[in-house]
Length: 257
Length: 221
Image 1 (cartoon, each protein chain N blue to C red):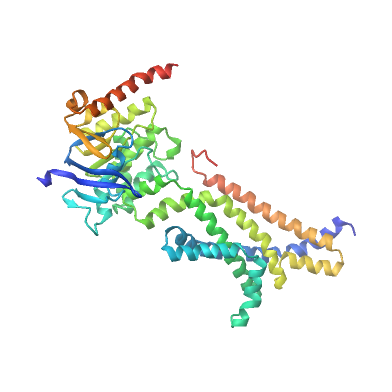
Image 2 (cartoon, each protein chain N blue to C red; image 1 turned 90 degrees about the vertical axis):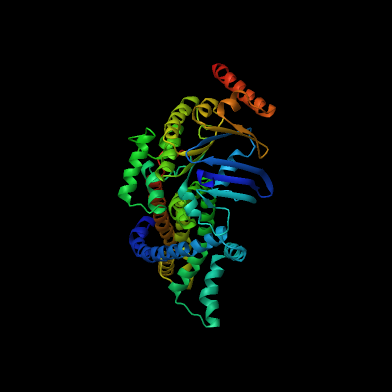
C-alpha cells in the first residue's frame, strides 16, 4: 500500500540544462527503511537524492512523499522540506554562524519553534551526534568529521521523516569517516527512513535494509544487502564492487609509500 | 611665513571644512547603499527587463565623468523645472554615482558565495528572502567590506568636486586661503594633508572592523 511508503519515485527523468541524468528511475522507500544507493560516478545517485526533495526539478515522473504527491503544480515546498533532512557531501554549514546558531536558526525561521525550545533541541541533537561543548565554535574551527556531524545534527533537529545523505563521508580522511559512520549507524538504529548514497561497503552492509545499484541514470539491480554485495545478479554490479574492493585494498599501501 | 607657520595658521580654518566633507560623504554613501540594493537584486534575481535596466544604469554611470553628472543635476535639471540646492545636488550626484559602484561590489560579493550555501538553505526550507537575509547578506557584507571602505574613501576624495558648485568644504576653504594669501601651494598642501588624515583614519578603522567581523576559522582572503 502507498501509505507504507514514505517515498515513492516513479519513472523519474531529470537533469541539468539539457543534460539528462536520470533516465526513468523508480525507487520506493518504506517508512523506517534504510536504502543505500551505490553506483559509479555520474550514474545519477546525487541527482536522485536532490530530485527526491525537489532541489532538482524532475522533467517527468511522479514523486509521492509521505502520501502526498509533490510533483503536482502548486505544491508547498516548505512542507516538503519540513519532512526531509538533507546531508551534503561537503557539509554546507553556514560559516558565519556558530554551531548552535546553525542548528537553532532553521528551527526558528522555518518550523517557527520558540528560541528556547530550538536551543534545547540543538543541545539534544548535538548530544546525539556526540558533539557536546562545540556550541559556540564556528564551523571552520572544527574538523571535517565534526562539521559533518553538525550538519547531521542540523538536519536531525528539523525532525525529518526521511533522511537523505549524499556521500556523507567521501570528503573525509579515514579516521574522520569512522566517527561520522558511527554517528549515522546510531541514528539508523532509531528507525528513521534513510536514502543514502555511499561507497562505504561495510557501512552499507551494517545499516542498509536494501541496496540499489545505479548506472547511467537507471536502476540496474536492487535487493537484500548481503545478496547485492556478495552475490549480485548483474555483471556490472559485480565489476563495480570489485573495483571498490580493489581501491580499498590499495589505499593502505598507497598511504605507506 | 614658512610653510610650517602657514600650516599652523591656516590648517584649522581649512580643516573646519571636514564637517561638510564628511556630511557629503556619509549622505552620499548611504544614498548609494540604498540605491545599490534594488540594483543588485534586479541584476541577480530580476526578470530580463529589470536586469537590463540595472546593468544599463551601472554601465552609464560608470562610463561618464562624475563632474558631468554633477553638472547635469545642478545646471541641467533646472531647465526641465527640477531644481536642487547645491548640497542636495552634490549628494544626489555623488550618491547615485556611488550606487553603481556599490551595486557592482555587492554583485561580485554575492557571486562569491558558494552555490552550496543556497542549496543548504533551500534544503532546510528557507524562503528566498530568508536565504538572502540570514545566509547571503551576512557573508556578502563581510566579503564586500574592504571594497566598500575603498568606495567610502573614494567618496571622501570625490566630494571635493562639490566645491565647484559652491559647497564650502575642505577644497573650497583651501581656495579661499589660496586667494587670500596668494600661496596656492601651501593652501592645497593643507587640504591634501586633511584629506589624507581622513582617508587614513577610515581605512584604518575599517581594517579593525574587518578583523572583528572575520569569520572565525576562515583562512581565505
